[in-house]
Image (tube, rainbow, N blue to C red; front, side, top):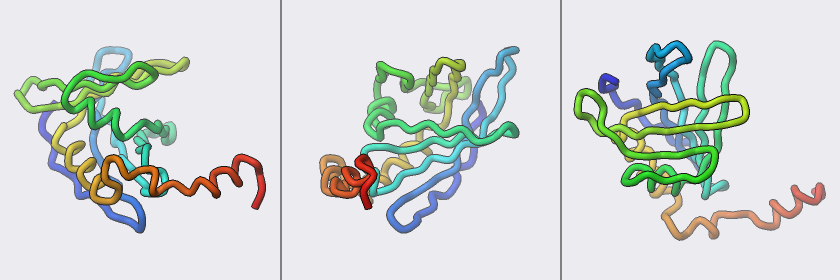
Length: 148
């Protein structure tokens, strides 16, 4: 994977997003770059989204913010997503993302510095340990019960 220029982080009201490129290997062993958008919203403080953009349509995965943070330093993840640090062929720090579902598996890598920058912006919005202060529990219960 060649080092990609870092894309700017966009700040919206209550959230941040950043475009990154994931380098994947397709079923024939060819390297494929998948444009992806990382997203975070303060009103969903424990999660972040990864939207993979392709000609066949966008695919969104939601994962724990702490999973991505921990995966920058050491292997982690027990479920459908595993994250771990690595070094690419040019000796750059990359993060490996291993997604698994009943429909298939995607193993990708992206620049660790881009992920660190994105996570830093999420921590400015919602510091680690203060996530529960940003939850609207009354709204969540109302949504679950189908009441206005």
